[in-house]
Image: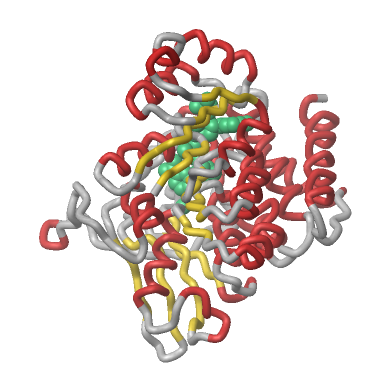
Length: 394
Ligand code: NDP
Ligand code: MG
């Protein structure tokens, strides 16, 4: 199986490279990044890909210089911009596209992969939040399976595959609820007053997972869980009321499925993204993988559960509103504005609670429409950009 990794220099991308090293039947033939040409060059020397896409054009030129020696002994192409990403997602020799891009920039490459009938292993949740109805329609039309990498969605997929009802038949099956677990992030035990003063460093200290900066801030605001509930609704074709959020600080249970007969299936593993990454590549098979086993006999703390706190984490309430309107452009606008606000927070331009405050303000000013094509989504993202320019930067 030939793999294309979109975002090979990121947290998911680097871990995908590690996973594939243990899978003799898989080969990485496409690498892409935004601008980290140094790491991409190292990966290219090791993996000898056929095709590389560097989103940033200057970085693409720097990469060409960096790899001038390799180009004498190995044939490969370097492309840039969105065109490069689209080619990377649809190259003829590729069978599986791993989408580890961050942000809604991942939407068009996902659609390109689906339209080229590639299997898609999807970490990039923003793709589904922004354009879930287009993506799931295209997947159905092309007979493509979207294989979740996000740990909660992988857990749900694993539970559904383990039950007698196939995940694809979930609407007809006996699924009562999906229970999405959340660690609660670094501020779970902080007071609202303390959270209001949270610094970038505080927000980047996730208790259980080591991830890219954007998703780590989303975990601190709990926006991440709201994005994930929308991701779950699309992936498993579930209505809003069937997805419940549960805080489980130890991140041992990665999510659960409750069935109509009262049974609950949970998927557990030590918190390590390489398990869901490998499963997305090899499902339903489970080849042996070097891992830290869960040691139930010597657990340092009990497994605990608590309801999410909507007052301390207003992004939960905001995403609930969008989750009730998944056929509209509201989730796309929310997602695009959140991306801009998280970047502003990381750059020290706004405070922690400004993220939710600006999102609330934008919701009050935004008229959503039905998603019929990419044009609707582009327009929603344009609204977010203009809103950020006018209110946040101004
Ligand atoms: P990172 O920020 O670590 O990596 C993002 C990758 O995408 C990098 O390779 C980056 O390139 C590339 N990239 C960023 N912007 C662009 C762009 N405009 N065009 C092309 N490439 C771009 O993110 P993560 O790996 O943490 O997250 C990736 C996705 O996976 C996110 O959607 C996240 O929510 C999801 N996810 C991540 C988990 C994790 O454990 N990290 C867990 C579950 C889900 P460069 O290095 O050059 O900037
Ligand atoms: Mg997750």
